[in-house]
Image 1 (cartoon, rainbow, N blue to C red):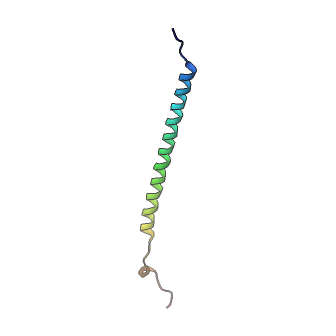
Image 2 (image 1 turned 180 degrees about the vertical axis):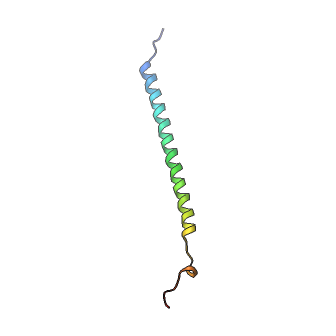
Length: 59
């Protein structure tokens, strides 16, 4: 009867765990990057001032 290769199984389990953690990390980074871009876009829309709204100091 063949013996189980526990080191191989353990290594495969560790690799799967590392891969899953890397995917989670990328997902979080993408989520925060998208949130920052959306916040930046909404802030820019609210902070834009047309030339008509700028007061003239030429009194």
